[in-house]
Amino acid sequence: MIYTEDFFAPGSTYPNDNVVELIDSYTSEHVVYKKTTVGVPPTGDGDGAIYRKKGTDFYKREWTGYVNILWWGIGNTLSNYTETTARIQKALALGYDTFFDEISIVINDSLPVQSNQKLLSKGCYIKQSAAVKEIFNCENKSNISITGFSLEGLGTDYQPSSSSKAVGILCYGAQYLTIENNIFKDFTYSGVSGLRNVNHLTFKFNRVENSFDVVWAEVSPEYPFGKKDNTGITVGGKNISVFKNSFKNSSQGITIAENSEFISISDNDIENTILEHGMYLDAGISNMTVLGNRIRNTKKVGIKLQNNDDHTNYVCNNVLISNNVISDTGVGGDGILVNNTSLEVDPDNASIIIYMPTFFAKNVVISGNVVRNAGQHGINVRFVDGGVVADNMINDIMYAGIYAAFNKGVDICHNNVRTIQESGIMIESHNDLLNVNSNNIDNPGARNTGGEDLLTGITVRYNNNYEIAIKHNKIRGNDNEAMRWGIFVEGIVDPAPNPEQSTFEIENNIILKAKYTDLRFLNGFTKLRRLRDNYKTIQNSPGEQP
Image (cartoon, rainbow, N blue to C red; front, side, top):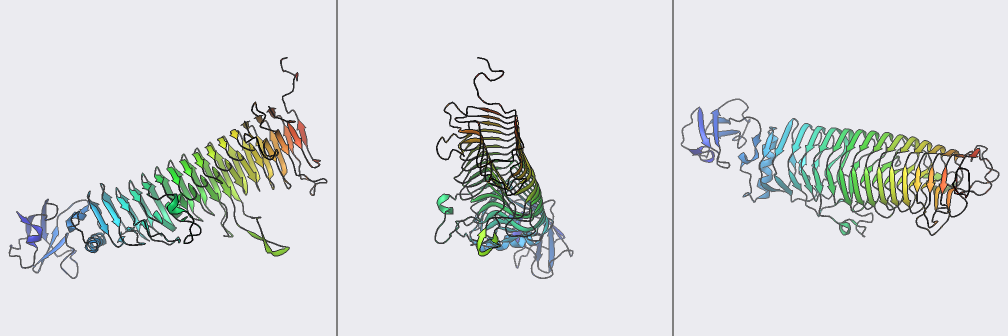
C-alpha cells in the first residue's frame, strides 16, 4: 500500500487515479481519497489532511463523523510547539467536528474554536506554554461542545485582572456552549472564563484541581490583595448551569458575575479554597438556585451572595440556596452570607464614609442547609427584603448560629441550632417585620467567656428594630450554665425615638438551663407589646413533678 505523504509528495509519480486507497502516514489507518473540484481551498495545496493537492488535481478524504487531529501529523513525537499549535489551528479553522486522540500536546498560542463545532477527546492532554494565553477560544461563537480533555495552564502567569486570558477555555459572549467531562489544572485566572454575555452555558462533570496552595495565593507586596482572582470557573450572563463538577485548590471556587440571570449551581464539590470563598455570587443576580452542593475547607465564606457593589441598579432577587452542606470555613468566614458592601457618605460630613446601603436583595430563601464548624456566623443575612431562613441544621459555630441585620419581612423558623460559641440567633439593628419562630437552640454561649449579652439563646440588640416576634422557640443551655440568658434584649432607649420602636412580641418560648434570669430587658424597654406564656426552669412550676 502507498502512504499518504508519499502519494502527495511534490514530484510524486504515482498515477492520479480518480479514487486512490492509501495508508495514513500518521495513524496507519486505511483511507480513501477521491478527486474533487468542490470545497477546494482557493489557494495553496489544501488543508493538509482533508483536501490534498497532487500536481494540478485536488483530492478529498472520505470520512464520516469527526475528523481526527492525528491526520495533521500531531502527536506525542511532535516537539516543535509552534508547529504543533499551527497545525491544530489549521485543523480547527475548517470548522469540522474534531476528535483528539489520547496524546500529549504542548502549544504556545490559543486555539480558536468555530461556531457549530464539537471537540471530542478520550483523554488528550494539552498544556499551554505561553504566558497569559487561553487554550481554547470560544469568544462570541455559538453551538460548541468541548468534551474529554485534560488542560493545563502555565501556572506562573497570574495577573490581578478580570480580563486575564490565563484560562483553559475563554468564552466571553459565547452561546449554547457545553463543557463536559474535562480536567483543568493550574490556570492562574480560571479554568473557564466568560464574564460577560454568555448565554446557555452548561458546565458539567468537570474537575478543576490545581497545585496551588495558601502560600501561592497569600497577600504580598506584589499582590496586596492576594491572588483573589483565581477561580475554578468565572462566568456571567444568562441561562448558566454548573452541575456535578469538583473544584479544589483555587483562591475561590465558583464565581458568577454581576447582573447574571437564570443561574443553576447544583451538586458540585468545592474543597480547599485557599484565599476566599467557596462561591462568590455577585451583585444583581436574579432567578438563581444553589442546590445540593458540598463545600468544605474554605478560607472565607462558604456561599456569599453580594447584594450590591456600587452598581446602582444591580439588585439580587429570586434566589434559592437550599440543601447545601458547608463545613470548616476559616476565621471570619460565614457558612452562608447575604450582604451588601456598598458605602455611602454621611450627609452631615462628606469626609465620613458610613456603612448604610440602601439596596436590598429581594425574595431570598435559605433552607435545608447543613452548616457546621464555621469560623464566623453560621448563616448571616443582611439587607434582605422578603426572605426565609428555614429548616437549616447549624452546629459548631464560632460566633452566632444565625445573624440578622437590616432586613425587612424575613422569617427565621424551624432551624436547628446547636453548640454555638456565642448567640444562637443574633438580631442586630434595623430589622423590620422579623419573625423568629419555632427554632430549636441547644447549647448556645458555649464559649463561656466574654460579654454576657452574647452568651445567649436569642439576642436582640441596639435600636431601630420594629415589629420583632419571638415565638415558640425552644432554648436550652448546658449543664455548666454557659448560656447566661435565654432571651436578651438591649439597647432600647427611653423614651424610644420612634413610637413603633421595640414593639415586640415574645411568647410561648421554652427556656431551660440559663445561668441567670431566663429573659432580660435593658435600657427602658417600654413598648413590649406582648410577653406571655414563656416557660422557664422553675422548681414546682405548674406541670413539673416534685
